[in-house]
Image (tube, rainbow, N blue to C red; front, top):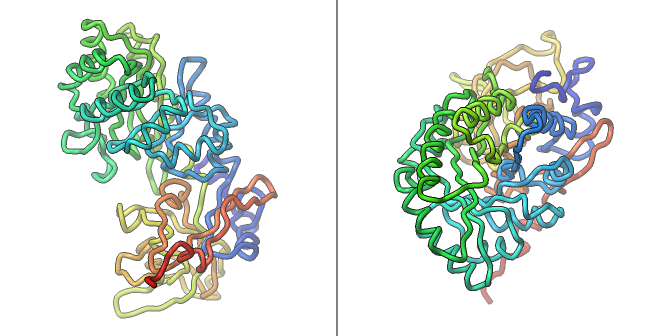
Length: 423
């Protein structure tokens, strides 16, 4: 099954499942985020197939896409959740997610967030510094609770990905130096308001090879052996998320391949009894969504042809932030007799030179045509802003022939509804 199987072209027109994209554009306007429910389920099933009855907990990394409808579907499928803020915790609780399947990551947890997570009864805090450990212990004691903790260790492993999404090197802000972890675990063991339950690492995102994961796992196993010698016994091992998807010509890593290597390595070291936690985000939602946009103006100068569309960097930040590639497809194929194919930069209307969605794409276009920005299910709407006082798009979830509005389009009035002028 191809990555875009749920966005097929029928009679020359792109669809989402069984609905033509022009129908959605006419009904809901553009720019518009469109998600395929069946694509979400298919991505989840790839992880289920890889589990093969082994003790694995999949905690969806919801920073990729935190729409309540997306969260609710994963909850129904049996997912736990990897959260990085109190707001994300509130979202999981709002859809009735099981707190006992929530892991709380992040380097700067605020006290109110720790309190809310303790009150909810989450599975684990992934603690990222010695200072945070003391704070969690103090807050738990003040609430007469015992906080379940693991340490997120930094294994100094290069994930071979973009530097902005690499998180497992010593120069990154994340985690505790693996050489210092034993000392911090021993401190945790001394604090009665803490319960040590696991060890955690996360080395980066958009990873397409097994090797970086196994390099990190081997380092974690050495730490686990040192912990065991010190009388510290763990219940789980969390290897984070990071499995990549196909944006252009990548060859994604199959969850089954990763899990087979993980359990083979654990078995070799007599650690297969540990529960394995994974925190996939992008690989569950990335190719389940697109950004639908309309061409407003075609213009050219001596150097470039530009397709100016109604979506912009405030709607999809990844290209200008990461120099990220998203495939761009014309929703309706045009005959070259109507217009000449050109190499276009696809740009938005925002007053920034960085406001672009794609560069040097060969397209056959007329003004008013629709474009689909593919692979926009992850780190797309969640990173959207209201820059230039632009309302954020609506989000639509499609199931077969049914379209469901899962977030209404913002109005201009809503942009400043909470603002006040001086009296």
